Length: 550
Image 1 (spheres, rainbow, N blue to C red):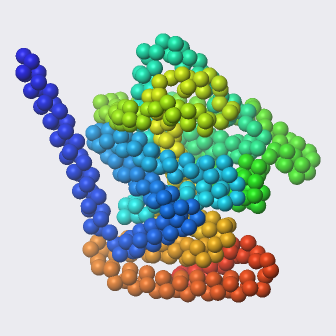
Image 2: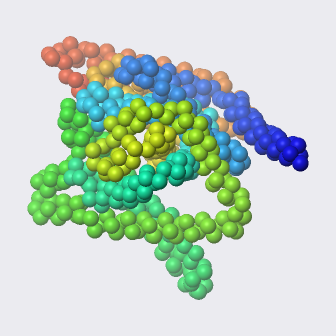
Image 3: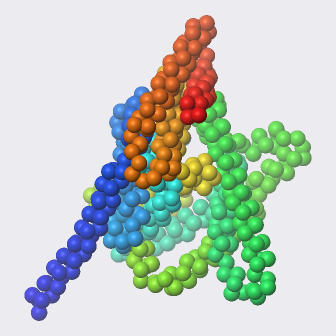
């Protein structure tokens, strides 16, 4: 009997391993297929993006950080690929890889936060540069694919959430045997929820305006999703369905416009804050648009009323309630759809990343669990966090602190996926050549940070590279869509890339010559002159490249 049981176990393990090996082989075959379909323009875009990103990263930050950003980009791309498989075993592997990718991405993305909010001046600029470098590396790796324009990044974000549930499950199971800590964990969880709600409903004056804009954007997105899931046909007679459906579609369209407006307003507000002279000198926390500024700058009584509205809890409670209702409607529809399609398959795709996240958490947390990790984690916790949460982390086993650290890393990775998804939803990233557009935007953002630290050569060169990446990549994408499959385009792509490259080099050299010539007559040199050279280079290079394309 024991022998039969052992043989059955070995057979089961062998079957699972065979299926998983087949899935991995299938993923590898797909990756090789993408590499074989790599066009000349794709290879040039990848080479330019990675070369410029690593060069600028090493100059503005350090070689080690620049290398870490490349690893973070590759890890994000691998997580996206594995998260979009319909095979549950690959989904399990995707959950494991997502947690690993989060650890790799944690270092550079955490440095972004540490640089931005822990220092001023060049430290803040270095932090923003790290973020752009991570996005540039991720975009370069995904150029041969349709990601991130086809929803794959959004799916990877969902996998990160499910893997996070796996981490929470492991941490909760570890706390179950600890009677005293288990009771303390319940109190800490209640306090943490209350702290999160207070943070949303009663924010500080410094970030009240930005937090309200973000809450409006999230509410518009969730309510729009919920309205699209309303089963109108089940509640209304046929003669009224058409008018109601039409009204709902108009409402969803208005909510989408509200979402875009809120996101763009938030990006503008944060961008102006980070690029302001006050933020560069004193740190961004000193430069946020304080509500008192609204009160004093706007004429009375408009400033007074707007300030009261921004700080009032009631509008935020209304927005949170609308979010809850939209989520409830959407989740009910998801359950109904799952029952219609077959609960087993849906549950497999949901549970697989949770199991993957739990398995890799046990492996990694066991290896990195150390009392020093708990001390480090507590030292970086903001002082506004409830005391019960901090006490729980201190008194819990080191394994729990390691699990919380992994959860933080996963949250950082999810925020990067969410940022890319939002850029796509507000049409900053186009539906065609999305990876190329993201690489170009990231490089141009890097050029701005180089100009802010008065490195005109890096700024102008990176700006030229950003525009060349967009021009060459979009040209190659257009050729593939307009010509029949299999049409040789290598020579055309090389000629176009060479012509655009020479034109860009000429414009960049001219801009640098003009910069040096003007700087010679300024005593002392104007630090804003690098930004002027960057702007002139961008405009002239764009005009030249577009004229070359006819």
